[in-house]
Length: 124
Image (cartoon, rainbow, N blue to C red; front, side, top):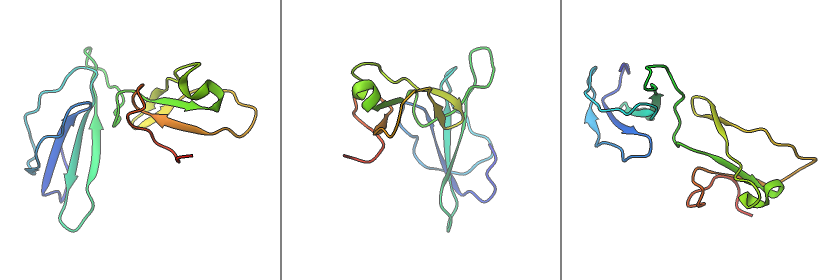
């Protein structure tokens, strides 16, 4: 990895815990899993941290990275996930997409887990 100016970093396979912060080094041994994105967060003194991700399938092909391994869009049109899960698909790094049809304004939330243990969007 390459992060000009970084003085420390930490790593995680998505869905697992972050490693401890370590002093920056250009090469680092890390065990990744096919199809599971690896996120690296860098920190530079006097600057905000930033995160990059990478992912490779079992065949060695690139796959998209994200903070979460799944995402659901739930709202009034699918009875907040009761009528349909609202499964979204990773369409680019850190970008989820779904096709829905609505006839006007509708409230919605995004949830990375089916059990609603975390969600994003304004609380009603």
